[in-house]
Length: 170
Image (cartoon, rainbow, N blue to C red; front, side):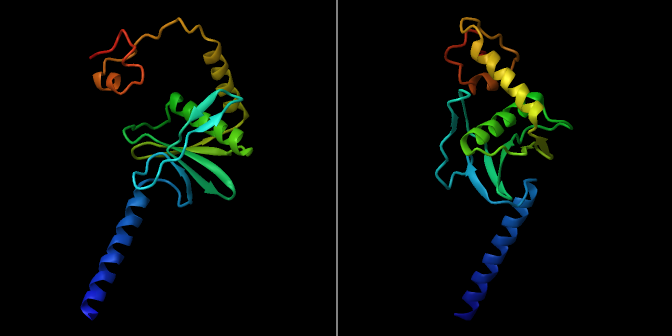
């Protein structure tokens, strides 16, 4: 019985060490996760909804840090020295959703690329830029169609508009 107990303890310690190493490679801070759209072993959270801004979204994670809710967007295939503007706006949208839903503005959001984590400050300027884009989107002519901006069949297949698109690559 003593050997089995020691063996189980050794396996438990090995699993804990492996989990710590995996978490360390994520590039994310060690903060409690209060929302996730990625874990298969737990029921996924509902989308965040802001009726006042006409916005719905599901950040990959929301971390709690010193009473603040910090959105995290993970783009594991991206490798860049600076975050893409579209990713910054997506993260800003999550900040706006958190602000509207919880009543507390996040000071920043985290954007995780393959090997880098960017801290994107959610300041008045970024918020105003996002609101301008939302206004433009909401007032756009719905009959104007978008033009495909790529030649990637995989991207077309994953698009939510592939069944309606006259320019799909499949």
